[in-house]
Image 1 (cartoon, rainbow, N blue to C red):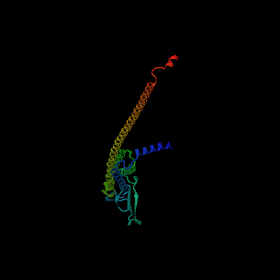
Image 2: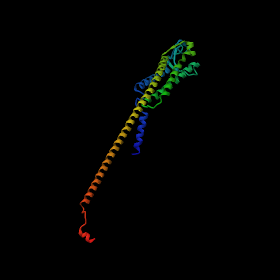
Image 3: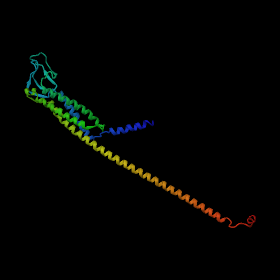
Image 4: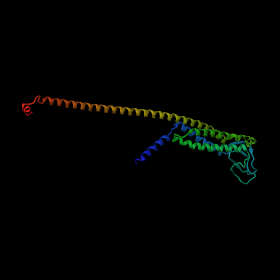
Length: 272
């Protein structure tokens, strides 16, 4: 039990050192998490949208399908042409790089995928900052800035051959992509504010700890001084008592000498 108590105290000290609820400021932490999670949702919706861009000139895939009027980054809605095919209905197909021979289109899609993946990972890490005070937020802020650039450069989609040939216009997916990019910037700024808030809070706590330590040392010195004074008074009292006792002893000895006979008796002389 005696060995476990110091270990428990050390663990508590480590927890106090590394973990503190809202150690980066409740307002800025809440704002950063709101921006980052909202940006994640918008980025995922943008990537999965089948209407990233509208086509003013329809895209003809095959005679059995209706002309395509909107296209997504990774998915496309194709409806069967009932005049040619007996099949009725629509389906969502996945656009793979093998099917789309457009370098800019594939690069834009890859950038969007990397932005979504990195942003989601950084958002999960940022969520731990609610209780993890010693987390290093600077690389996380840089990561969100990189996510912003990846998300923004995915709009190179509108410079692809598909958009040049079919005159693309902004669709709902592109709007979500732009909103997500703006929110990544807001997250980056909020993370910087979180870091500055933590630095100031740690400085204030360290200053208070130093003041408390100085007060404790001062109290200890005053206590030691009082103990020394008390010991000095007790020693003076003992010395005074011993002096009084020795004086009393001397007085008694003098009194005894005075009470003794001053000359010898005749009998004592005869014996001599």
